[in-house]
Image (tube, rainbow, N blue to C red; front, top):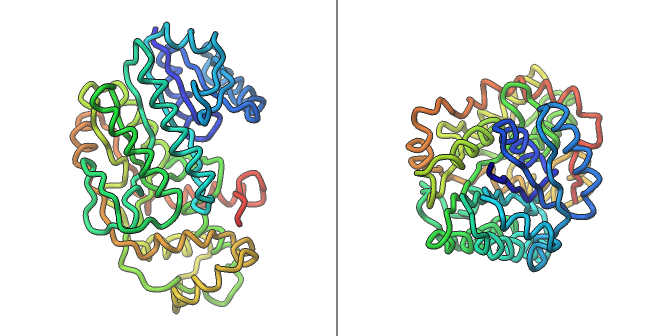
Amino acid sequence: MKEVVFTGFPGFIASQLIRTVIKKENSVSAIVLAAEMEKARREADEIQRLTDCGPIRLMAGDITKDGLGLNDEDTAYLKDKEVVFWHLAAIYDLAVPREIAWKVNVEGTRNVNRFVSELPHLLRYMYFSTAYVAGDREGTLYEDELIRPENFKNFYEETKFEAELLVEELKETCPVTIIRPGIVRGNSETGETIKFDGPYFFLNMIDRLRKLPFIPYIGRSTAFINVVPIDYILKASVYLSEHDEAEGKTVHLTDPNPHPVEEVYRKMVQEKTGKTPKLRLPHTVAAFSLKSVSLQRFIGVEAETLDYLTWNAHFDTANAQQLLAGSEIHCADFLETIPTMVKFYELHKFNKKFHVKIG
């Protein structure tokens, strides 16, 4: 029986992946920060209850430390197993300071790389990057390229780019698959998520402004927004982890048929309020206004979100389409599933645990 190991638990994606792979009669382990251990135990107990599977081995560790901060017993345990290693631990906040992002995203990944390269029976190393390692590059962005852009929109993008460079080097010696997701949202069928960030910032703002006579567009954009549901990410990445041809590949798990930013925004406004957006708040005015942290918190939008509304890029998905061919795994249409997303948001919008700290 192979051992499937995760960093990033009890985070949303890692937790959902564990629920998927544990059903396949795998033995599952998670490397957990000491500060997150109690939360991880509760989540592990819930997963075991829902799946009726064996216990999850929780190992206290820290990816920013040598040897991942694991004790000798846990290290020996992993070195004795055939391992599929999933590295998801990262700072995902677009507003994260560079020093913190570098320590976790870059140095942490360097430590994970060293650790997995020393595992005697490594079956696959699944590394979660992001499609946004492209920084400010525009046009068509290919899976088989990792080109340093002139600029990054934030330190999250920069540090994930640097981390992916490190993982790319391992392809020569380790069975690596790099996953580059688009902007991840909740489940396309149930709407379930654990936090309202990314596209949910739109819903926050629309909710705050819903009593106005009209809700304006934010600037003018011809860009497309690439948002993918968590269920697509789960099904596709688990499938790829078991697919021999995915070894050595980088895969865009992005929407092959994204919609324009304005079309998505209009649909959200209509679904939330029954209104259609009118007039436009100039992008420069919105950007200047959101320099105020108080205003960001009031309308529930991080200022960094605006950078993605006018970014003109298209993610090529040739690798993804080739590898997933015949699997019946596909990305649900964003516009068609916005009603489900909004319904879940409405049910939980007053629950503070879903809202991320802004500023």
